[in-house]
Image (cartoon, rainbow, N blue to C red; front, side, top):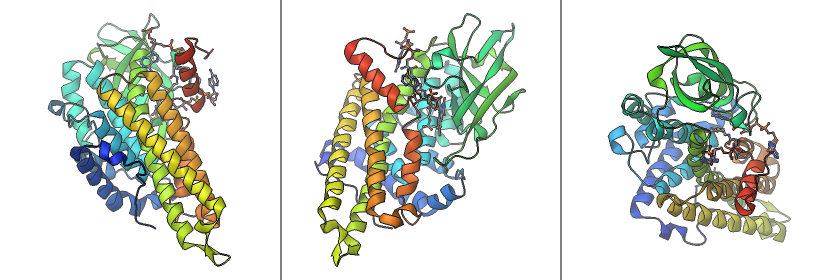
Length: 390
Ligand code: TGC
Ligand code: FAD
């Protein structure tokens, strides 16, 4: 395994503040210490290293932009992005855990929840004492969440929730689930469902070839009685869950750069060391083409992410801006993983190197939080004004 030396061809580091660099270095050290040594084994064994959850909480990886009074760190969005890049250099599954906890659980509770909900859940989610998950996707409705079937009725002193969600990161280990369901008028609302509520189960989804160090499952609601105070009072409609996705997609656009940089760093070092025909393979033009294109694409992705971060801090990052960065940066990372794998030849398929694991993980990353196609259509709609989804 090579020392991690991420590329910074355009001196993008100079755009970061000292605070961003301190945060980055603490997460990078933690990944070197706690993730890199165990992650290949965890992926091979298809196990989420749950004990890392509280460590992530201690590091401040959960809710970095949530105000300190609710347990967050009150940082800006570039700090959040930098954290995501470092975590995904370790593994997309570790970044997923932080994405879901931060953007899909803490963010909606902070933004749409009551003051009581904020005080009850946010501090424990920030420390990792509580694990959260987010249920939007259903067996019959993935790209089209507006057609969801999960619904709840008003039973006087409580709600009755029925339906099912699928492909939910962390659902089997979650203490709380942020669930999006339709009310009796067909309006999408958000509810907090807690582990142990009667009729609520969260079976694990087995057999994944991707994100093997992350746990995924279903959420099944069979006449679950949900207390009325668990409804989000401050949002009605699909814009609720879609706003959470903006935050998570933003983090993924930064995160994918970490996976790409780890692959590039591995391929560059290997190509300088590995000799064929009495020369390092890095001396052959075909390999230099791959490496030169990789560093070019990483640089473009870094600049896109940084600019998106500035706009997000200024509350000017539209959903279209975020979709473009998620789509571009994840595709970039997946291509770099594939090209890096080729540079390593047969060694590229082994777990002596991180490339194949990143490549398989990125097949999920390019699908979740909106597929590659859906993000293209979001950009298409943004520039033409015509939605082409249906
Ligand atoms: P549409 O009619 O366009 O919009 C409905 C309402 O929502 C508003 N809206 C948004 N609001 C905030 N942010 C956005 N990005 C928004 N996009 C739309 C819109 O203005 C409208 O508001 P209003 O007030 O007029 O009602 O909705 P549509 O039904 O046509 O769907 C549009 C589409 C296809 C873009 C959207 O539904 C979509 O993004 N589909 C992809 C689904 C998706 O991304 N699912 C992700 C599930 S979570 C996940 O994958 C977690 S992975 C976790 C991990 O990291 O491990
Ligand atoms: P579909 O929507 O069935 O799409 C299938 C194919 O059709 C895709 O190629 C898609 O691009 C294409 N397609 C669909 N509609 C159109 C269209 N209008 N035009 C052109 N092409 C179209 N969801 C959650 O709610 N919470 C989670 O925590 C979560 N975690 C996940 C973890 C993992 C590991 C994975 C793999 C998924 C997770 N998801 C989660 C679900 C994820 O968001 C969905 O898989 C994703 O939104 C796509 O939905 P789908 O798989 O049903 O695909």
